[in-house]
Image (cartoon, rainbow, N blue to C red; front, side, top):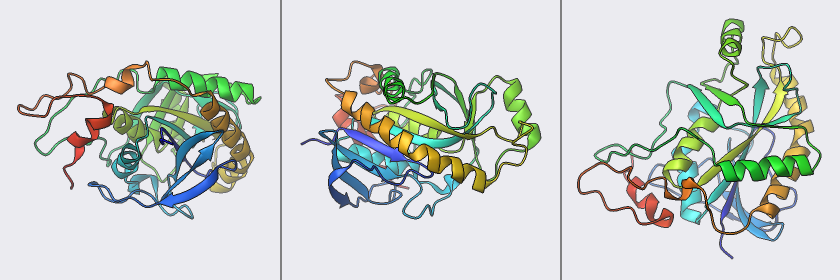
Length: 284
């Protein structure tokens, strides 16, 4: 059975409870090694590949993640859709801890990360106005609603470098800009998934109000971990429900994101999503 769905588990989500018929697959990519082995298994009757974003035992800082290897590994496995989950802070009162937000926009405040497969003699400019897959995002939101979670559809995720949390001044600034949640990992995944012509969406699992809130002016890892543990089962149920709802061929723009994007003279012509990763084989 073809592996067409990838799952990226963030802080606290290191496994999928319903995953059966498991096997581990260790991959090496032209961009280095992924965060760890991919766990291949069956979830709600579909073959999926699960990757713990921060590695076994949560060993890898957000700034240390090899995003290119992680996404390239999914492409090697034949994955066409990625459901991810990550812990975030809320920048608005109405988005409460333990809620889920499905962002439809990103704002980049990172400074040290490689966010493209291209370069070193090969130039492409990918449309990224709408950075997540609209179809897969709707599936994820419907799934969260179906299992009884409080879900918010749409919003802007600001991605910061970390590993430190925001200063009070930064948190207030992001609120003044109208941003909705704050995290450290999802933007690079979304960019690279788009270049690989893989549909991508994320469950932003709200753990705290960030430091702007009078009751959360000292965000600690203990607070976040406590809410993460409460969120894990909700995230697992939502992802499993979303997997069960995914069906049919893709009708979104993600599958042909490279069409017309390659500018370098003599670059191989775009054919289809299955072959798009051939353009990304220039190792560091």
